Amino acid sequence: MSEKRQYFLCGIGGSGMLPLALILRAAGHAVSGSDRALDQGRTAPKFDFLKSRGIALFPQDGAGLSSARQIVVASAAVEDTVPDIRAALELGAKRLSRAQMLSELFNAARTPIGVAGTSGKSTTTGMIAWILHAAGADPTVMNGAVMKNFASPDALFASALVGAGDAFVSEIDESDGSIALFSPKIAVLNNISLDHKSMEELRRLFSDFIAKTSVAILNLDNAETRSLSSIHRGKKITFSLTDQSADLFADQICAERYGVSFTAHDNARSEQYGVELKMPGRHNVANALAAIGAATAAGISFKSACDALCTFEGVKRRFEYIGEAAGISVIDDFGHNPDKISATLRTLKDFPGRLLVMFQPHGFGPLKKMKDEFIECFSTNLDTDDILVMPEPVYFGGTADRSVSSGDITAGVTRRGRKAASYDTRQECGDALVRAAHTGDRIVVMGARDDTLTTFAEGLLDQLKRLDSD
Image (cartoon, rainbow, N blue to C red; front, top):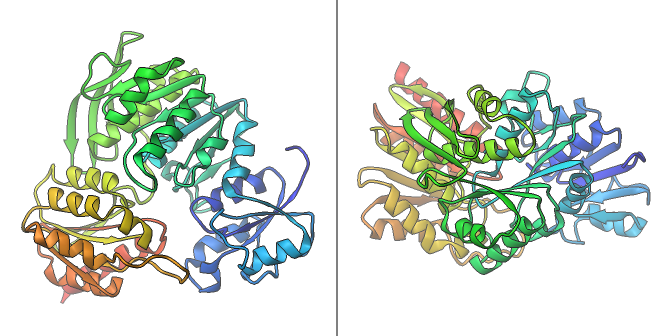
């Protein structure tokens, strides 16, 4: 892609679009875009950051499209009736999906490293990025979350890196089937569990994904991934927290409130090193092993990978400690499907303290698809004195099937003997939790695809501080 082009990104503030915009701009292309959140006056700092990088922003009314030479990048779900898309069609401008654009960049790299799986992609991608960076490999990175190690006052939204090295590390999403576009040299598959697609579809997509790679990094602790490991005929590096025969194995796992330590074993090299992570949970130990596997496949030494992980600061909104007031902690978390939510709740249960959880669903579709799994998840992982509250899913209009609501989930959890309630608005949920909270409790804000959830969590902490000072 040496030719300089003009790109217009529809929904440029999204977690997938923003880093793509940064990578394209850093490569010298002209980049502009629009976003509904910008028109609605939401998440202004994000858009100020894009402007500071020389990216022009327009209302989502078609005004930013003026030439057939522009290449419009938009989610495949964006309909032709959206003004930007309508304007592009009238001009005859080329349209690419975000996945098509990303795969074009990714597949052209000398060492494309793809991170896939239902859960843990952003954290594992960030870990690999930091290991390669610390080793001087200068990678290009596309992540769906801000990587704290690379964030600074001048780069608050560091979800992308542009390097001169061979590696292009990218989180790869399976939800729309576009994983089929990517051809990694090194492929990480953390886990497979029900999310956006049926298990049959997921098995096919992930099987095809690892079949194309030179080296597959596979999690033996996930039954679905283990089954793919048994049929994969190419080179593979396996990892596990329970199976000592795996290529990479972790033991002596010691849980801390906001971290976890363990000993990593590389059985192929007969090496072992201690690792101290600045994020909690056994699931993050698994993510770390996956990152070590990918890094060693890319030529980084086992010891260097382990050392780098000890200074990895994590990614935003993954079990992120916001603060404490009146002895009540507030935590912000990206958990939005049963697998991710369960991992966070299990981690929290390693330590005493009641859990007050607000879960904001990111759509009516996931609620309907995973209704029973959500009910099972919360009923199993919450104790009888914990509290779950849920607002209705974020909804900006359209033709979504709204037959299953948050109330259906909380009613099911209540029938299972747990405390749960739904409210019309997020603020009502927050007020209910603040009223119920007392010393020793942990308030956990959960949900995806909404940057304002962090601001909301910070607002709850402010409320607690005000009450504590009265």
